Length: 588
Image 1 (cartoon, helix red, strand yellow):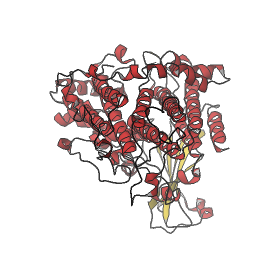
Image 2 (cartoon, one colour; image 1 turned 120 degrees about the vertical axis):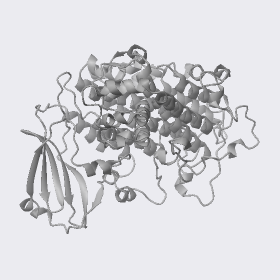
Image 3 (tube, helix red, strand yellow; image 1 turned 180 degrees about the vertical axis):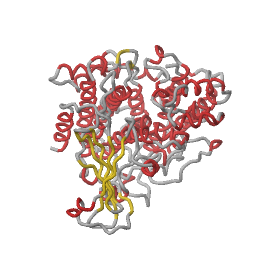
Image 4 (tube, helix red, strand yellow; image 1 turned 135 degrees about the horizontal axis):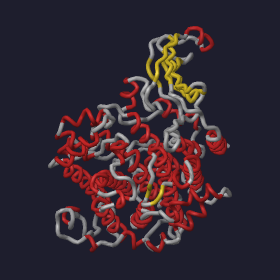
């Protein structure tokens, strides 16, 4: 019943529009504990309560009277709370597994004050108030720093409560694989559960591979003279499989509400794009079918050897000959639909938040209908994706993909709450890119391996996640480069959109390293008149910034290729190598 209650609550929360007033922050002092209330007189929008626990000497942060915060803009009456919709989908997914009360427990912080009983709390409060003049503000600088580049809202203690000795313990991919080149201070993270076999070549022993030493820089457009066309075309290879994709996914998201149904189907009918994510998953499912499942590793944690779906095929093992048409093939294809639903929902919500007019060369959903319809359409897609995800009947895959949903929320929080210092850090930028883009791709790739009968900690599953991690980052970095080099009509979305939102991406960050006078502009998110123009002039004047950004994209693309090369050679694997090349050479 929890998913139903969550969705009903979400829908009900959008029935009443709050009046538009300047928000006010009230901080109520109680010993060493504070209550911060954001009000929008005369109506309370939301309050965050920081209170002392009567049972232990620490403080916890909880949410009290959480109503969806909305701020009216003069143009679109934008609802800034649309991203909280993703959290509803997480609740719906997590309901199929561990208790949500544990999964979403609050973060703890230290306190030396002996807490008083809650009933005496109100009598000892000291009130302090101050106005917030902007639509986005932080309660204090320490909170910003605590958020840092990894905006996880669950404490380690609370997270531990939801685990047993055998449950899967996921680690963010940026703690498993290398984010920056060695020349920029990057290094491979230590070996831990999740990446223990990242350098394993066990699958290649005695198996010939004509591309074993492939370097993307050997191909035309990246410095070499080889033709990438010698490798299979990734889109043509799965073209027949994806032909019924739009019709199938439209049926999966159909609803009795005509307007909601049309909005939800919008991107699956006219503006479906290249469906890059379903193509990746379809090719990955074929690539892992060519890999024989590995035996459990002695001394490794039991959960690392778990997660593989029970395979019901002839011989008990998925192969290239029995894969197509099997139940495994069907579930992996359904995972592609789920990932596309999640991706499209995030686009719809992003466009509402960013007040974007266009998407994929056409009008954004909220421009065609309304903000309310767009938000609800995104919510509905996430809810449907959650239901379909549970029907894959693999709790490990459910947990992995639920974590991908959580990452989308974490990325949005990080984008809004990064401190001025973090806005200048390349590592912080890459972590945000991981949360918002790469996490969905890499978790989907690892889930594809699990559905194919491979354990979580296997060489195959590790290579799949590492490929998705680096490909996702290369994709985002190239996107950020195109934001400065491609026209809006080519991109299908507004150019210079990131700077308009106060965001600094790889090209600007490298320019700021070369021209220190840009750093204060980055820290204040280009808010002053002339900031954006000054930054653009410096970027185009720079002789190294754009090249460094392109090299960073090439670094991650090569890392993605290296991960693929640990899998046995197959037509699907080689098509993924070509797709990696396409990601960093595309012009839109």
